[in-house]
Length: 84
Image (cartoon, rainbow, N blue to C red):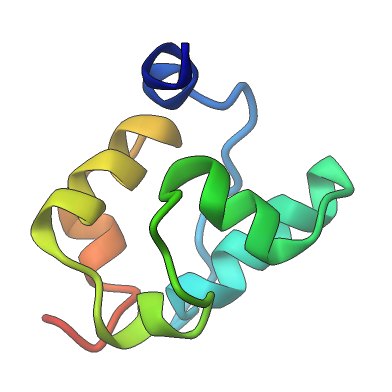
């Protein structure tokens, strides 16, 4: 059941702002859905330790999962991290 939930795309995806960090972008989605930012992140990446770590320590597999959830190209998400 959890696998089905994780593979579904979110119906609303907000475009990233210029120079926006991934944590900020996820926080804006959380605000839109009226949920805590960490809850939004863990909906996509249940193993995530904190929102801030996505800006610096996002693995390739996590990047792909986030990109499929929102849906965006992984390269767009990568540009919002320090991992360029």
